[in-house]
Amino acid sequence: MLRSFPTLRVDVSAGVDSLDPGLSYSPECWQSLWNVYLSPYGYQHVKGRASSQIVPALAEGMPDISSGGRVYEFRLRKGLRYSDGTPVKAGDFAHAIRRLYLLDSVGAPLFDDVVGASAAAASRGTISGIKTDDYARSITVRLKRPSASFINALASLFAAPIPPSTPSRDQTLEPIPSTGPYRISQVRWPKEFTLTRNRYFKSTETVPATNPDRIVVSVVNGGKVALGQLVTGGADYADVPIAPAALQPAKRKQRLQVHARTDASTQYFFMNTTLRPFNDVRVRRAVNYALDRQRLVEIFGGQATASENILPPVYPSYRRHDLYPYDLAKARALVRQAGAKGARVTVFAPTQPVQARAAVLYLAHQLVAIGLRPRPQTKLLPPAQYWTAVGNKNTNAQIGYAFWTQSIPNPLAWFEPLLGGDETSGLTNTNYSFADSAALNAGIDRLGRAPELTAEVNAQWAALDRRAMRWAPLAPFLNTRSLDALSTRIDSRCYVSNTLYGVDYGRLCLKRGAAAR
Image 1 (tube, rainbow, N blue to C red):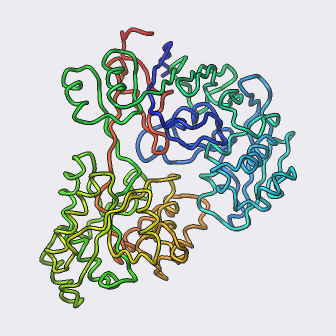
Image 2 (cartoon, one colour):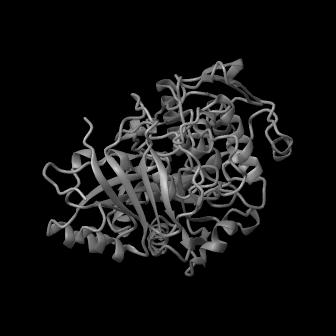
């Protein structure tokens, strides 16, 4: 039921980058823009795992996929208009994709599998793999190869149609007309921007009507400022990290409310499968048995959920497995069986965050407990150097800390960068374990061509997660949790957090009798 009210006030951190859907890549901006610029497809405005499900937004229905997953055909809904009243045409989608390449947008690679997609083709005026018919409202996209993640590209902000007159430069200060429930009506960049209702927007089953008439988004410096705004009534929601220790007193005094959500982020230890002693699966399994994952949750301040899965629990493809209960005796036996007792090991860690350093100190202690010999000094590197170093095969990093956060809510975006054998040949990569298993590569390749995340495909990804963890190139230990702080005037029943975009501003509403601003 619609529960409209005049103004929602939101605080975000200083990570804002752009209000142009072709250039924005920061969570702080995406959280606002997904209710401003609609793409042919989008994510459900609901809670839980279902929020990663892709549904039609501007399109009439899900695409017809043919030619073995290489051709996508769909039609835009009838009567679509931008917030300035001009009609939305099928050709506007083609213009938006072409513009990504002209802008050298970070979103352009999402469309690299489209036939003819390149900066050179964009500068000539057309991308041959995209055909549109404005009269029929139809769009046909041809791919070079099947791709499990292409539907996510069509659901990204980068795929939002824009008027063909839109210049190929950042439009933050001259906002592009919108197709969603809101338009950007005022910009005081980079301090504040305001969203107001788009009078041409018509709600659908998948893109519902929204509650706030106006959303004022303010950029603040630090959690202390954001907390002060919440407790004094200056803000209704803060998308700003606030220390849990600071939140709890205010919560106890009922000056704000807090909602916890599990992030699509996995913390893990990598083990280099090409180097002794971790080239033996028994040693890798021993490390997994040696981890008291609940202890690691405590090291991370309790704001986490213990896990030994690669995929996060917020995905429909997640199936919790319990392959490695904490068992030091079993871990010691596996090390002995592998002939690895007393093997020298260097543990790697970044200097930040501090929890990572504490986690590897715990890891080193457990390695001693199972019969390995970690060197007294952990190899500490600043973050700017660390990830490049452990991703370089010449560094010979045996074991260390790592984490992965989703780019898109699709299992392929986890397995390919973390475990794909193709990711081990360069000087730098994200497959820090240098995993190159024929069985895993085949599974990733096969599922990477599945164009839809059906229930059956999700089950196959879950099975691949389990198979990967039996081979144990990684030792996942937790999924972080975030705390969303809201003012007491917000009705908690209207709180909706999306897997990709976080708190859905448009769904928030006021408690009965709460004063409107």
